[in-house]
Image 1 (cartoon, rainbow, N blue to C red):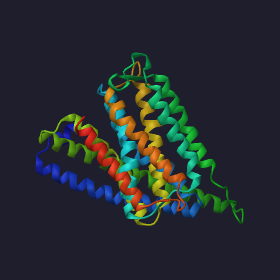
Image 2 (cartoon, one colour):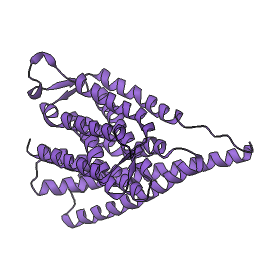
Image 3 (cartoon, rainbow, N blue to C red):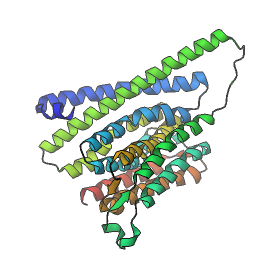
Length: 335
């Protein structure tokens, strides 16, 4: 895909960009509408739908780009993409989403927040090399066992999320009705997954077109990787969160962002770390910029969840998150 797009002239790039943007927008609307219908029709919480089915779909760009980076022999790119996506999802996506409408953060989401905070602490402190005495200017290392641990935690996260759902019994116990419901459930999940693949594919094409354009304009690869790619792979979360908040489905939005963040660490980095021979090296820039920012934004998200009487992310809190994201971009550009 990257080779095909890079060989196109500027006019064709613009056409590809616009078509991808339209597909991304339409697929996002279909994804949100059917996810909400699934939630309402089958009695499944919007948070659960957002944190599992929707998040699995919107995490596909990060997963695909990370696998591609490993195959190309640039695993550092995979680490930057995953961590940068967590920062982008939390600061930019939730910040923009809060401007579109209230994003409720019920206390029940705390159980899933534990997975995010715990995996981040393992990621940061599990990569440290304390013995050289120069933390911020020395590389770190992530052992393949950490990647395996992350991957083993993925089914635990998904199971724990669905086990929170209350089981509703059928009023008439009709086997025919159960068959109809099961068939309808399969159809709805299939539509959601197909829409999620369309979202992920169109977002990936957008990243390639913008990256190609930036390269032709003489922008360095480091800047592209740290800003354009991280933002591009978070477009599915950005569009679904904004659409969900605008339509009044804030619970779906927070579930999607939190689920995507957890899967970025457990699934995307789990694959990257475990498949890289000898483990993943961590450049000093991660201790200087990326890790501090990811801990700050996740810490702020935890504060918004546990220290508010309104139980929602307000517009002012969203503006704070957006300001932090802008700082992250500035620090990344001038690193």
